[in-house]
Each structure stands twice: as structure tokens, then as C-alpha cells.
Length: 298
Length: 270
Image (cartoon, rainbow over all chains, first blue to last red):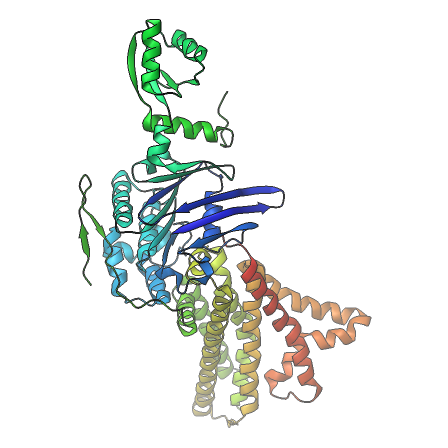
């Protein structure tokens, strides 16, 4: 269980996180989605007590992070896989973690094995690790203390496709066992498979949040006809919101309503379906377009 | 420890970490934090090289003294100990600096301070571990000095004085000061080169400025850590020299330590 309430962080005149409120429930994987610089990492650092918030508060397992005794045993945190001493070996980093948490050293071997770092890899200095290996080590570190809550910032970065798939399975299994998982990404594709809930953030503000199913359902309908341009006009006349999608049109309406309209106007339908993840992607891009660093040409 | 195999439909079988049936955690004991900090000072190349460098320089200076000069001139145990003071007093603070600054330069603070969010406890653990390592280094210097004194007597037939506990205690106290000063400067600046340079430059600059500017003479005498510590190292400290040690120590060690601890607790860890 993680909560953030009216969380705000200002740096001078710049507001990095603006009045963010959300909840991550046990048994779910919550995807924390936003473009680069949207404030995801700042939010996560505030949750872990590393960055003092300007206003608002966060709790983990019902307490402020700093009130957790031996927090590594409650919360698994991976904020930046590259933030490790390059001169230490992977095994040494886990050993230090196990020492602080008061764990048996055999746990280190178990975690190395779990994330697929071999004996010889674990004995190498982290400076020689690829980003993917650092992520695996970071995930091993987060899981070390058998936590009920996982807070992972862009853990899929640098993982190969097999690694991403493995991580999804791991997080799914973790949540299915009752764990709470908060997982950030700037790529919808990366987390839509595994996330139950989504919190979308842009320029420090929450722009959408809810269950993936809800957001998918509300993401509209894709329609393709023999003459999209003409049909778009008809749809707009009917007061519907239409945007051009990569193939066809994205309409904020139920398929039934659109099909009926098409029949009325004698338009030939080529494709008609709920937009689902394509619509979610579109929505994500739109919601964050104003906030994204690369300006989308209007 | 067994692992739990979990296979869910539609997914490849994913192994989850085994559950730990440990008692409800209590807060991390300070001794454990200190042990971890001590290990962190020793498990990197930078840390090991620094200790090796201190060892080599100390051994070299003692060896040079052993074979140079007149065999009957300045070859007492105390003289050998005194020779180790200057090189160690330059290198020991770096030990203190590195114990703190690597959390920022290598960004390991992200992990350290999420595992122990009470940062002051981490700060004290660093202080204790730096002091322990510093003391071990000074004791090693004393052993080397004793060895050299003995060898000098055996090889060159010197007639050394042995028992001088005051300078020994003085060296321990003096070097403790500089280690603490290193930790404090590291905490304030959170950056290795800046901390090392300012540690080396600022007190010396003060000495220079203080002796150059006439109206600063009195203040300079009282606030000069190098001058204040000299009688401590020599083991001749007495009277108002103690007061000078206390005042200079408050300004160059205690105050920076408090400021550093405050900064450690308040600053953002990125």
C-alpha cells in the first residue's frame, strides 16, 4: 500500500510535482506513466524520503517512509540502476544490502540466481556491467529483503525483450501474491501488459488515472471507411470528437453509435473496433503532448 | 532456503523469491550500520589504494629515517613516531572525506539512505568507522616506528629512549582531529575534490592571512588548527594551549561537523 496526498515539489519557481494524489493498492501493479521530466522520479524519491516534499505527504504501508523500521525489509526500491559504486562488484552491493537488512548471506546467492546473474558476472565490478545487468542487479537488490511493496523507477530500461518479459512475469506474480507494485515508465507499451492500474503524469500533474480497463474503454473507437475525410465531417456534425489515427479515425464514441451513423449516411465501413491500447497510446500522447519535451507538430 | 515455483496460465513460469520467515524487523542497530560503513571504506579500489598509500608512505618515511643521519642523533622511538605524523595528517582526512563523499559522487546515497532513512545515524556510523580506520592506521604507524627504533638499535647501534606515552597519546588525539575534520568537510561539500582541496587549503590560508594581517594576530593564534595541534603532537601541550586546542577544534572540527550533519540530513539525495 502506497499513498501520495497532494504531493508537491517546487524548486524555486519551477514546479516539478504539482498536487499529485494517488494510491497503489496491494495485489495490483500500478503503472506510473509520463514523458521524460514529468516528475515521476521526483515523486518516487519523495515516497522514499530522499527528497523532502514542498507540500503534501506520502505513506508506505500506512506510515511515512522514515517511520518504517528497517525499511529494506518492507519496501524494495530501485530508483536508478546506475547509481551504484562502479568499483564494487554486484555481489558486494547485495552483500552490503543484506548486512544492513540483517539477512543471511545465502539470500544474496538466491537473488543473484533469481535475476540470472552468473557467478562470474556477480564477481565483476559494476563499472563493467551493461545497463541491463545493472537493472537485474537493482531488481535483485529491491527483492533482497522480501518486501511487501516494490517501488521501481524505469526498471525495464536497458533490458532485452526476454528480460522485459521475465520482469513482467515477476511483477505479476509478486502482485498476485498480494504485493504492491509501483512501476514507472515513459513507454506505455512497456507497462500496459502488466499494469492493472495506470497513473498518467505530465508536467508534474496527474492527467489521467484509473484501472487499465477503464482507461482502455474510455479511449474511444477506431473506424476506417472508404472515405475517412468525408465521414469525419459527418461524425463532427453529430457532435463527436474525431482525431486522425495512424489508420483511420479515432472517435470518442461507442462502436454502435458510429456504426449506426455510418448506416444512416450509407458509408462503407472497412474497420470498426474499440481503440483499446492504440487509443490509450493516442490518449497518452495527447495528454502529454503539451508537456512533452519534443514538441509535437500541431 | 527453498524457492517458490510459480506458474500462472498464459505466462511463462516465473520464479519468485522465497519468503523470508523472519521476525518483524526492528530498526537497524547502530553497530550494523557502522560495520557496513567500515566495509564500504574497504571494498573499493579507491579505499584500498588510499590505505595502501598511507601504509607505503609511512613505511618509507620510517625507513629513510632509519638509515639516514647520525645513528646517535634523533633515533628515539618518539622521533620515529613524529616522522609519521605529517604524511599521515595529510592523508588521513582524505579517508574521512571519502567515507562521506562517495555517497554523492557515486550516487550510492540513493540506496544507503533508502535502507536507513534516518540519515544522521548513517552520518554517525560513517564518523565512527572513519575514526576506527584512522586509529588503526595510527597504531600501524606506531608499530612501524617501534620496529624501526628496534632495528636502528640492532643494526646501527643507536641508544634510543623508549617510554614516552605523552607524544603517543598526542599523536592519537591529533590524528583523530584531522580524520573528524575530513568527515566534516566531506559532509558539508558532498564532493571529493572540493572537500580535499578546501580541507588542505583553508586552514593553511588562515595561517598565512593570520600572520600577514596584524589585527588578526590574536584571532589567528587562537583559531589556527595547525599551530594549536603542534604541542598536542609533540606531547608538550599544557595550560592555555589546551584552550587553544579546544577553540580551534570547535571552529575547524565541531562546527563543520554540526553544519555537515545538518546538510546531510536536509539535502536532497538524487
